[in-house]
Length: 86
Image (cartoon, rainbow, N blue to C red; front, side, top):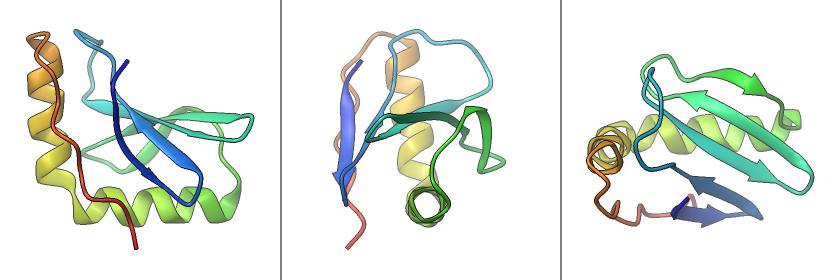
């Protein structure tokens, strides 16, 4: 599962050839969540409130790039790194 971005201790990852809907995985300490790219909401898991706010802010800024990476991963190609939140 490639890591496509890292910021404030949060890892953003995608699996190759993963199931729909288009989503990414966010990990922060012992917390893990699966985030829907289109709806920007948690599909599964949980993150602390502040970490979730950071992840959703970042995802909103990079929605196009996330969808591009999703498409790359669906065809088992390496996704591109995405600028971290600063």
